[in-house]
Length: 621
Image 1 (tube, one colour):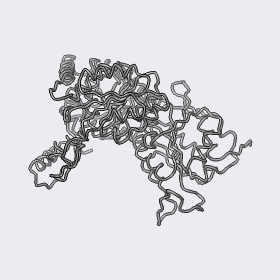
Image 2 (cartoon, rainbow, N blue to C red):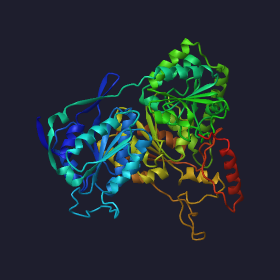
Image 3 (cartoon, rainbow, N blue to C red):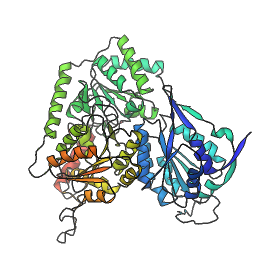
Image 4 (tube, rainbow, N blue to C red):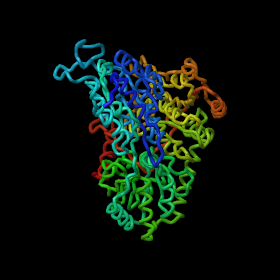
């Protein structure tokens, strides 16, 4: 057997450079490159290998470990999981900074490969700088924190272990039903140790991503289930995009006159003005979709994990005769809420189910007038919110409308946390698939700017906009610098409403006066954060790192800034001061949060009783 002597790190880089996937007959290089921040735990291992190995892998320097993993996650999401970046860090704090982002990828079922440095396997320089010691188990390191947030986790303590670990990593990363964060912990001494690896380990490998067809028996069961129902509602999730099934969604809905509602991850599957697109579903849903959900006798959930926001904490489907049919490539997601599972690729399942139902002569019981009326009423409500006028400043819904109209149908928006996801889910009008990029599985604050950079890497010809609140921006915006460094222009539209206003609103809606969520000075009179708002110059911060910035206080200034930013060759930030509390409210939905059972405030007591009554109407499983 022919061998080649390489360090563990060199072997890993050489292996990653030869991994490909094939989907629908098209071959894609799977690992585009490595994002990294170097420290003593990886610079002489992975760093040396990236410097010396003659590979096609591009290296991108991150500026925050969490941010670079968010960027890698957004990249893979926008590429429909057909291409990824690996991310490398040093040990200790550098590695732990990636844990939150690892969870974000795993929750959203997005492949990302994490290569954190680890403590010395030999244990001789012990304890090493940045080592966490567990007195009861010396095999534990900081990297064990990745275990619960990884779909596959391994620690390479001998160079030859790399081979089985790398193959298992690829198995999980390329499996639509299993994918998420994969973590390979790399002790810093093992990274630099050599082994005679078989040359065959570095041959080109093509991993087939196969479209799983529905089992005949499951398809027959699903068809009979639908035949017995007259008011089905089709809910589309992110799996519809990853399966590239948006056209099949349209065919299926039109064939049987079934209204379509979209989750956050599924949004843009149909154009907003398609006659059967009734908008967003659930807690952040439209009135049209949520009214139809209440009366539906069948919910066909495609490529969604039916989170509490999609199901309004299991109260959305109120018809006592309602049943659920779940089409999902992962059985784990397909059986949620006691659904009838159809475990298959979304496109294959919808096409097969359409043929089976057509052969049986099925059509839904809706009248076109009913769906058209609900849709027209909702469109009018969106128009009203887009036109909201305030004498004292800018309403958030008005700003969203202006941005929606200005950026064009091909631009991509990225968002993740705060009040914006609700407003965007309800109000944003998408015409083309893959133009609405929302991370709402984990709703991770700080994803937005890094995510926009990742999308721009994946789709450099499009304009990409991060829509972000001031709270989320302050948490993590370091990859704005990376976008400038890489010459990958992104646009940041910063909604400055002086605090965590989404949670402030949630507080007040459950009986609180509001505490600790606005960005105010501490008052000498109250001893609390009740003084004046903090005057943060976000535009000045962006200008300081080299971005083009705009300060916006009026609609005219916003329009001018959006037009100018579109022409600007470098990354931009538009600092928009919006009025707190000018977002949207709930439309025929409810979200369960814990409310204090004991309080001296009557408002809190009332909120608790209201919560208790609503819980009793929720589905038990």
